[in-house]
Length: 390
Image: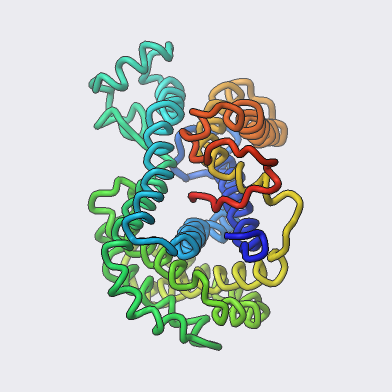
């Protein structure tokens, strides 16, 4: 991919969406009733609506962007493409799970009072399949967890499935790429609605890979949409043309969805589900159409910060949640206040990711590979055109 043909909007959107994850996971510390590895003493329910507003599409659009990136890389043979993807995903996954993620169960377990302080001994027990007290941390039953890196596991699985089924999926691609007007804004939500109806209550989302059928149905569908969307200029032009329609319709769908959900939770099968589930999926797809359409219209230009962002996004993703949990482990007991505490955690997380990437990861050859970066280029970073792995 040359600088002239590079999709700058995808580069920019990838960095912005993954940056949103940092804000989202920081906010999880303060959302009352939400399950997260650490919790602040300053819990609030006022974050509920904003978090739901974001949560209904945040991971779906991540998988769409990953699918688009794959479509831009499938110019070689299927075998070469698969090997390239496995190489860029598997090593960062293993390094992240073995080195970066263990901080999270340690901080969680010590904060819960179910793990003894001392990180060295914890690592010996953690990798030695120690019998942990019930509920010590997420993944205590197996003494192993990949926490936020589940995305890399799922992305690797979907890449393998895509390569295996590529001839079949290529034949049905025109069904999607031929959509225009209201059909593009509505019909792609139907497969995810079917997944919600038939799988959501029976297989709640766990990120445990096995038997996570509802999550697989949603995320693989989005990944496939991204792959189909890929290099199809007509679809991108149509999304840009419809961006105002999507922008106006998405909040309406969200309001209808919330209205039904306030009557009765979407996680229970009631008459309200007849309205809640369709509106949930319609809102999700309209929000994605809004983001894709506006990003294509506004962001498809070579911003000066994009070369840096392309390099930073993968290490930042791997580092950010461990940084958030570690900072919360240190700062929450200090009770610094409901404004200072989250501001410090968020700003210090960004600082850790920035310093870690700029001063360490980006300069050490073997660490670059462990965080999914290509070999250190001989030319200046601004000239790099390597497509991000995530």
